[in-house]
Length: 242
Image 1: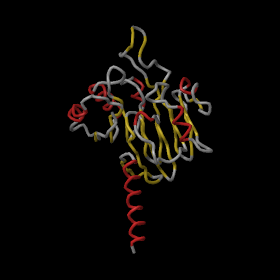
Image 2: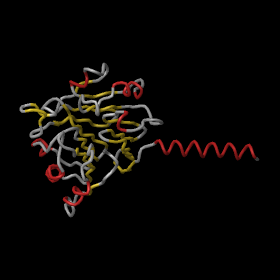
Image 3: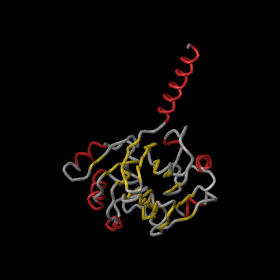
């Protein structure tokens, strides 16, 4: 009896440790099956649907990857160190992993396939479209935007009847007016690199997603965004994505 008790105790402890390692998640129903989104941190996200695992900008500095599954698909928005971790990507790869990235990021990833804004692909029934992500106002020096047009990507994932927009590092750019039927949007919100809460509001009211997650938001006051979008018809969800 004591032996059984010890085994059960060990299993319970192991399960508790595993659950602690797993990032928080939200679940959604799609026509392709149940979608689970895990919030690893900062700009790093994980999507799971039908035993398929998708990572966006996996970076160790954003959170723990201990206990997380290998990748079927990895999307890299751009080459900055808080979005691209080539060593981590090696550990997440398996036979058959597909990696899509911007051209600049692909210089550090031998197996990546380059996507430019407007390019579309399909992996295991999941649609992937690259879209523009860039600065208009915010510059590191005159004429040198933090994210020049055409260098980085945002991505739209089409999972069954749901479209998920992961914006990458961008401002509220004119091309957002072309985005239609977005169910979930991840929009960055930290100066000087991306958007203020007011800029996110303008982007959100252009895109009109059903659900908005601010991400990559650093020390920005997320309560301000929630207040600004009150009664907008857009559900704002705040998760630990500093």
